[in-house]
Image (cartoon, rainbow, N blue to C red):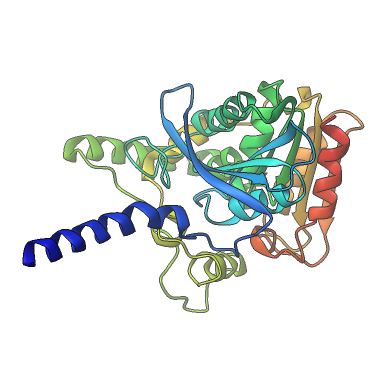
Length: 338
């Protein structure tokens, strides 16, 4: 009898373990009953396995649908803002893929917590690879949405990847610019040289120890003296509003030497060659607004648009559905993915 009871308990535990991941909801936003979602895996051109959530409308209007790859913010995971964007756009008739970038979240790559202007741009194109071979995706109607730092990578990918037919950036950061020049371009050449000395000394130390030093992330508690944008980040990443256990921004910092490649390799060098449509969205009161405004000035063609949301700050566009212009985004993709 005891043996049978033990076997029953073991079987029950196995069944719970097996089915729970399929039925649980680990996102920071409310699950929609209008879409189906499944976890998918695919590799980028460097052989790193990426993990994403594929959202599909339950009431499909055609055999093949337009599709969108979605990622960001920089240091976030697919269970946060990108998942919300993906789910909402799936409700509106698109097949969408929210994915974790290389070295973060559930995606592969070691060491962890590494960012790269090249690899993160490649991640966007790898998501397009995946969508391109799905039987219910119209291969000629694929777009991308990049949030925060991945807005810059999305734009960079659009300059390279001609399969991307339309791009939306939301509350965009130019990660190369902010790493090389500091906020508001306050860092000069000598200060940048000293930063490179510090980071290269850290490389030597990392090699000696066989470990990788990590930057400080957001504080666990605010003192009240922080800049407003840090308070805004805290309000999203460190509170129930947006906290996630796998999110770098919710728990820790980046691998410290990641900044070196951004300092030396500017993205958006060829953004003036993007022929496909671009919609750039930013908040009026966002500290990062200048990234979108300056990037927009470089774009060429009458199919480019900059939309400034009145009174919105940087993180309002992460998850506040009453602020994010989903109607505008939907119409933009409908007009340009055809």
